[in-house]
Amino acid sequence: MTGTALTDFAKQLDKTAEDTEALLSQLLSDAVLPDEIARPKRVVDAMRYSSLGGGKRLRPFLVVESAAVFSVPREAALLAGAALECIHCYSLIHDDLPAMDNSDLRRGRPTLHKAYDDATAILAGDALLTIAFDIITRDEIHREPAVRLALTRALARASGVGGMVGGQMLDLAGEGRFGDRGPVDVARVQQMKTGALLRFGCIAGAILGQASEAEYKALDDFGRALGEAFQIADDLLDVESDAATLGKPAGADAELGKTTFVTQLGIEGAKQRVRDLLARGDAALSIFGAKGEVLRAAARFVAERKN
Ligand code: GRG
Image 1 (cartoon, rainbow, N blue to C red):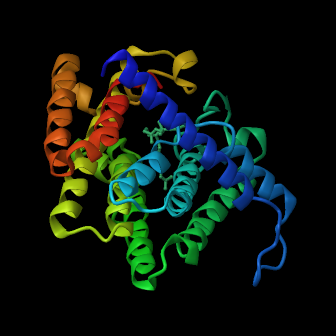
Image 2 (tube, helix red, strand yellow; image 1 turned 180 degrees about the vertical axis):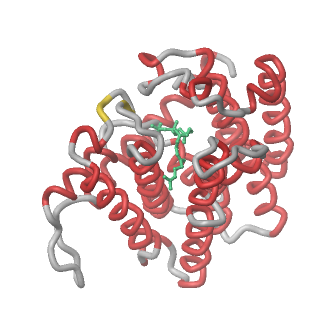
């Protein structure tokens, strides 16, 4: 990306992050909704601690920009993006717990279970997961219930046993948590653990925009390429960056003796794979012409990010 394109992109990303922050602050308030009984302060505070004031908001950005391709109203896309971000934040809270990655640092601050306690962190994660499905089904997302249903089902499948949760299970198994390590299918773990939510961010726009089959497939292909590029960038950062830049410990993969894209392809091989994925993403987006420009920039941002 040129300097100007990068600045424009950074401004757009910041704007969506700001809008997402404001929306999450409203959605994760202590105001009780119809059919709810009460929102206990401690769990609301914990949900807010982990969801506000940090994060690139890349997933909401993908929803907003994939939806913009079809001129979907920004407010509707932001709401869907906020639901996705709630799932992402829940996954980070649970991933950091002692029973999982046992991390002390996230987004440059103590992890939730360190700032509060394990039980509160588990419940805050559960509540974020649940509220995501309250948000994604709201009438303001789309006038047609069938569209809301398709979006909700896609989010469930990206997040659950056949998506992110399943990927986390495969990842833990690959660390030898449940007995022998066995061979690790790095690509499969990536597609599920981190790729599924990123792909959802891209197909969400197609669902909201009631895309043609070819348009849906284009965003699906793009989302898969972007997801893999994101994970390879993450693996590269783990070996090439430091905790101050990352906002979380570096070198964690090597410490666990993990098989990653970098251990499989080497540093240069991993960088080449990222370049190939960017080309694949560009090719997928060609169907949208100039309307795909921001998504193309998003893929570059993901590949070149520093944290
Ligand atoms: C516990 C059910 C469960 C799932 C956890 C996605 C996941 C599965 C764990 C995340 C672990 C991790 C740190 C993976 C590396 C890639 C990743 C998802 C990084 C964080 O995402 P960013 O960079 O974070 O988008 P921000 O802070 O910008 O939102």
